[in-house]
Amino acid sequence: MTGRAFIRLVAKRGIPLSCIANKLDCQLSTLKALERAEKVPKHYVFRFVNAFHSSLTESDMLALAH
Image 1 (cartoon, rainbow, N blue to C red):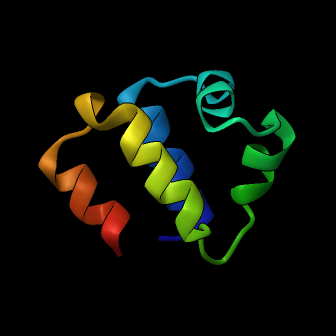
Image 2 (tube, rainbow, N blue to C red; image 1 turned 60 degrees about the vertical axis):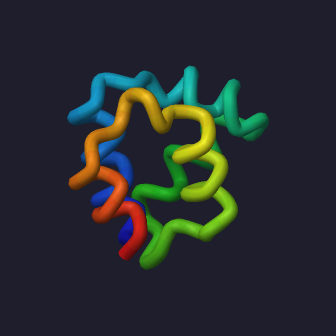
């Protein structure tokens, strides 16, 4: 998943980036920089899914897997 697609998915779910940064124990600037990334690092995806699985749909999970 590209960084831009990840940010769009997060925005669609209504989860603030600051909340994600807090849950993933990273800086907000790091998450904002992901928007320009060719591919989101897997450790961010795994930690995001673990922290927000109740907010994600099955299609969201499938999109994150790619």
